[in-house]
Image (tube, rainbow, N blue to C red; front, side):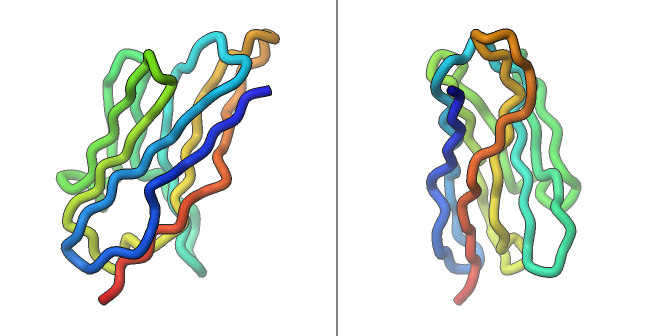
Length: 120
């Protein structure tokens, strides 16, 4: 079966940076879009960034200019490079991969999330 796993979260000081990774593995035929969401306690889940299979990107206004989404198709891996982090970026970050499996099922696969905490 398909597995999506995030990594790279942790505690960082305001103004710092983190690079999140999203590794997809298993019975994958192809990956269309990859997206990052985040959810802070007491707040609604927010779409942070997305990248298409062809590499076009989009970002939430709150992170535009600070975050960069990318992907390595050969590795079935996506990335979210985060700069100039502030406490408002504190959240659980989830990777979503729109995957067509070798079993001919296409749907979003979600990772379990990785915690990003920005605090001094």
